[in-house]
Every structure is written in C-alpha cells, then in structure tokens.
Image (tube, rainbow, N blue to C red; front, side):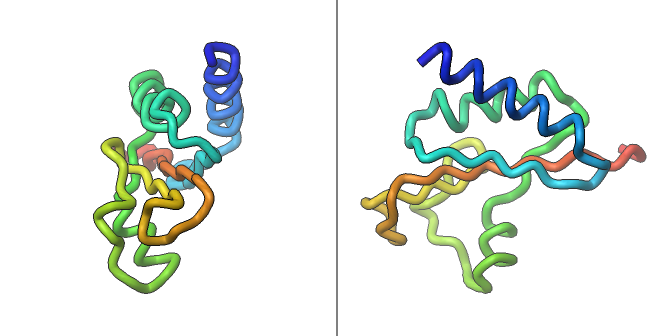
Amino acid sequence: MAQRTAEQAAISVEGARYLKPGGTLVYITCSILPEENDDQIVAFLKAHPDFASLPPADLWQSAFGTEIHPDVETAQSGIALTPASPAQTDSISTPCVARLDSKH
C-alpha cells in the first residue's frame, strides 16, 4: 500500500505542474480505500495551498444535470461510486481540485 500511495501522490504532483490557474485536476482511482482517495487529496491540498477542492455537488450537476445523491459524496469533497451506491457501478472515486487563480 505504501508504494502504491507514493506513486499516486507523485502522479498528482506531476499533473499539477501542467495545470494553468483556474484549471481542474481530476484524481480518479478504482479503489474505495481512504488511503488512496480522500487521504491523498488532504495531503495534496496541504502541500499545495494554491489548490482548493471543488464541490462534488457542482461537479455532479455540471456532468449529469441532476442533484447529487448524498450517499456518493465523500468526507473530503470527492465522489465515490460503488456497487452499494445508487449508481451501482464498479468502485470509482473522483475527488477534484482546482488551481486557484493567481489573484487569490
């Protein structure tokens, strides 16, 4: 697990290097483990104060045109779809963060 989470963290940092102000970094895994999802986002945001979480409800509304079901939001502003969720999909977690405009 330690090797996998270190690789995931490195990928996020590398991707962030190429993101312009106001751009969105989408972090997706096929895991439901907090270590690979919410914990990664918490650590990323702590190390990158020029980023902020995007509200899952806004992302859901934009993508699907409907209100988000409360059972798919994670504790750290992600969206988690599982066989047990209303979506009844394979496990997918999608927290999103945005690079803040340089004015902030």
